[in-house]
Length: 412
Image (cartoon, rainbow, N blue to C red; front, side):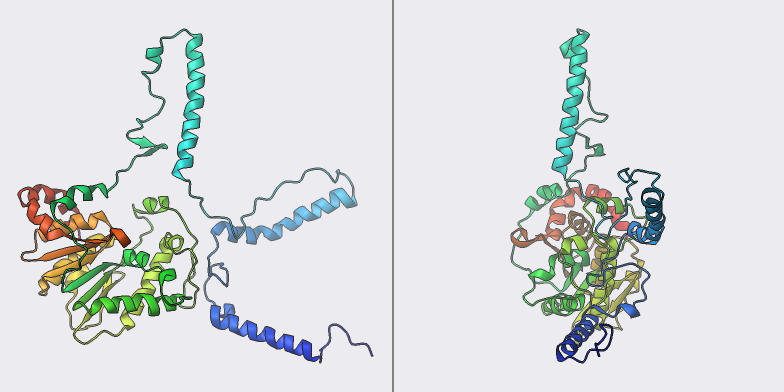
């Protein structure tokens, strides 16, 4: 009797293939997580955990409505033949899984487009001016922009470069590449995560759990061997933040549903451009710091939203609860004052923002008998800047300097 193709197959090759497929599914569930136990309401890719944009979700919800368009096509062109089959049909602009991301416009392309627009405008105005027999000198007296080019670029206000401020401050003292001896090290968490890229690790890092166990925590424990206290301060990201627009101008990435089994994204910098990704990563690393084991005579502190956690439960951190700033720059100064209050006179801050140096100089001028250093830059541009020495040089004009920085420092 001929066996049906829908029946149970007893062949060894079929059974072996079925067993391999089952093992593959089990391995995929163990590696990526079981999608049937997922409680998230987001639409995401199982392998990459990339969350789809809202317009993609809306397209899937409205996809069933396209059936009416198909039925109308068949009825009008095939059944009733009331319309020519070659007549155009309306195009459906559905957002796909790979769409929905804001494309970053390069400055060079924007400048080229602006120059082409200026050239076209200049040509038309010049021809019309010649037809009216106008004076050429008077023609060039008028601006062809709504704002002067020295103040605006591409219809946006031209921004200054804060790094230029370093050119004025660093020559006041000699910076060194030799690490000074300090008692406390403070880290800007966001800058630290940017520095510790997974692909630069000596061991293969596949998931975020690997990143915490192999890269992040070992780095902090290594730093803790040289000092008695390591403090990690994280940024917070409010939905109505004034900094949101500035962060968007730096580019965008894809939101990720992050768990400890989620694979590390290939583009680490693009992953860190999304506020929700950074917020989840910071929370995950904070939990890793909480569960880390530090030596008895050492101390690990980190921020956890509006609270602070420490490996030493007897340490009084009530003064640190006063900092509600969004950026870590301001909170770092409060942590400097807290460490100084508990007997630490030599403090090192690891950050990559010029604002931190300015705030450090102001802080050093208020903390007596203190040495406050800034570990600044990356790779060959890395150096140690003595903020307390700059504050001593600026002592004559310190009141003016504090007038500029005190407004930012006092709110911390």
